[in-house]
Length: 479
Ligand code: NDP
Image 1 (cartoon, helix red, strand yellow):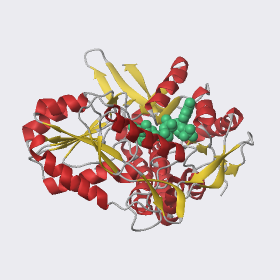
Image 2 (spheres, rainbow, N blue to C red):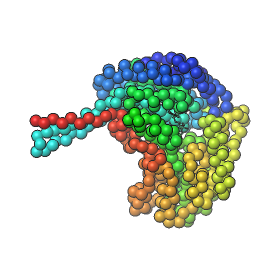
Image 3 (cartoon, rainbow, N blue to C red):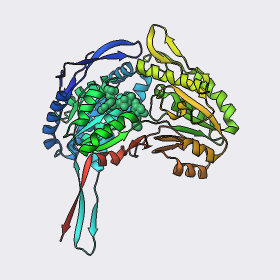
Image 4 (cartoon, rainbow, N blue to C red):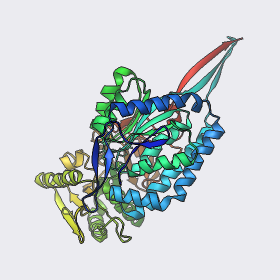
């Protein structure tokens, strides 16, 4: 299926007349073409967004809310179609797209449709000075949203929904590796009555289309989710133009397991936090540190459970692990396994590519567990973003904390313990934006989301996202 841009409320071919192949990761076959939009395409998207801004920014909160919630309802009504499209485009199991990706995309619209009606600003009385201050929170104008391939519609809408709820008009680019559900979203927005030009979706490579969005002098803010190196590049391009930036970047998250935890829940959740979505979630716990007392037991039980995971075609209902997103990504992940072995890591299970009968050219890899001796090896320090985790023992709380923090990333951490003092000490000391205790990826959309260190700048989620997409202006009235 060939994809088009969605600009000013209609689908249109790119002015660039340039296209990229879209691969199905389950079988390695090209099944469509995606526009590789250029500066001119971004320019017409900007004109559409800029024209729509005047009226959209003055649209009542109730009306914006009504439209966002309508989009959410239409996504829910089209769950099967969207989930299948996501699974085919990305390689993720259909069951995951049906239970997580698309429902969450719908929740994003519903949540921000409701949140905008509750978003308020502050006022400050200057006592003794006969003055009162209040803060206006005004939309920024036209903003850019750029998202990655791992949770395509989920992360795309996580940015778009708060941006438009706050009264901005948007130019959005999904990853060129997974453009399909973003393409289908245009149709839903039109049906929901979103005025033309409020959301414009341009497809293409990061280095052409993404770069054109970031370089556009009148796009006021960029909300970006993707790799740390790309984030640094975007920051360099955007900073001299003083654009507002929100950067959600890579992670290499610790999963710290103490002997006093609820073992069975921990074990089951750790399998999920290691391998959900083929390990291609920025929040996956890819460095597993286990208290020495239970290390050997954990190693045996964990490896046994991981070996039971079924690698298969994404549309097969019995599949636990689908295909990796692309051939270059599969090759990158496989190369890290080799490096880990070269640096002394011991492969406990997996480590090899899998051939799925009938789909021999698909990008399948066995879930892989590697035992490592220290935290300084490449496999523990660099983001692999695939179905690969490492395990190593620790003896004291101090050592566990040191290992967890000894990394340039700081997105999330998971802690398994029933000790309250330890929970508080780790919560205060872990250098991450999120700490999950006795759970993983339990998300409440009101909470601030984002990373510390090289995992990002700024927070999205809840009112934080609405703050990002608005400019506060202080009004001081002397009476
Ligand atoms: P990339 O950084 O390669 O790409 C992310 C997006 O940016 C894509 O749409 C990409 O386009 C685009 N892009 C690439 N180069 C530029 C550029 N010069 N200017 C503007 N846009 C550009 O990341 P991946 O898509 O490979 O996604 C995986 C990464 O995302 C991992 O590092 C992961 O940790 C991170 N991530 C972070 C999350 C978080 O919340 N912190 C959540 C999910 C993922 P294209 O793909 O079309 O080239």
